Image (cartoon, rainbow, N blue to C red; front, side):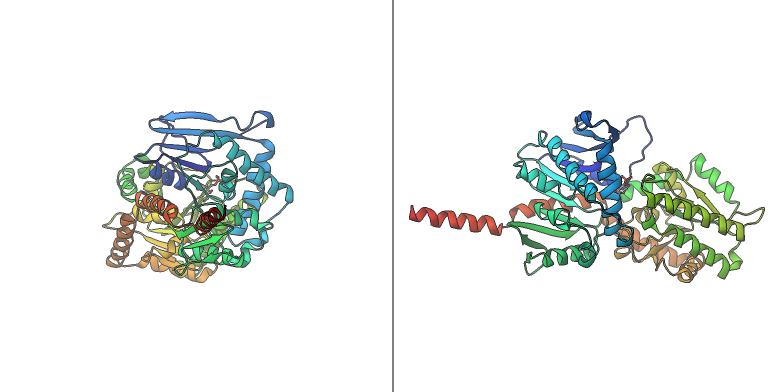
Length: 480
Ligand code: F6P
């Protein structure tokens, strides 16, 4: 089995003493590295002076090497806070209106990709497979190829891919989206995302085979498919069963005082639709006053990317809305919304999911949204809660037992919460079983296997231009 080299913006180096807090990307990468020799390369999360950045630090843990580099202060601003999170993130989430482009930041982004390639290059062996993750590293394969690495290289986009017209709004898109053609395999979260990317490459002049799963562009053949990211379903369900017996769970349950829990868990990000959700909840209290005093809405929202101005704005908006709803509907003995700006361990979140009668997952746009999947996996099969899910989350393509809403429609959100709270037990059980079966059959190990076998397949396809080159060389040798 070849060694797997994983590259992502951040690296989750396991802390043998710390609590288990792995996010979605870390769970996915760990699944890919399971039972094989591997190396995980990326940014340490630290910044430093320009002259000492990019010195790789290697940590060995069992059969895995974790190689991290620090970013210089300038690169951190231009690449991470700049082009990645002020241009790519909003545009790929369909928010062209929020994109703040500068040529300096684009060149910082391209420079960091080139520096990643320089730092990684010396670690790559000829027979390694390389798997690159997410929008921070779109041009990395191009940089690695320029340094002579002909290894199989796959890319997975964790966030959405909008229609071609929106991608064309991305300044100099050929240097970022177009550079995806240097990978052997490109994976998206949903079939909808894959089709959007196909249309983009078609407009750029790529030619597609009849089944449209691979295309030829600029002398390369690229396989392009959807691989909906998943969770460790069985492990998560077990964690929730145990976590519900914790002191933390007991304390929260006691504080609810018999009220039903409505739960939202999101990073503080404008793509998550938190203001719209709070307004939907306000509408619910207005339209269905019989539920006042009988529910508590807990919104757990760790802050994120706080140096990016749009994130500071959303923070203020959410704080104001929570204050307004609590002020309008609250009573001395009842606070409708509890808003918490803190990250919790995987076990604590699993306990909250299991306790919640309603899981509100209503992003305005989301590649997949693993909170939706974790919420389902964490439920008690005898008495499951109900998932209220945005039609704009990638997870909506799979979780057909959810109550699906348009997050922009407050009245529909209010009605969905009411429907979820009233839903009879047999219907809740039937919906839960359908979704759990799907999540158990399509867990994170299966996801990693599917991606890696497609990467192997991508190298077996005849490469159009290689074949033409060989044919030309053979003919030329007849003449000389
Ligand atoms: O969802 C995309 C993603 O980049 C994840 O990989 C990551 O966990 C999350 O956003 C948070 O991003 P950041 O690394 O910017 O805090």
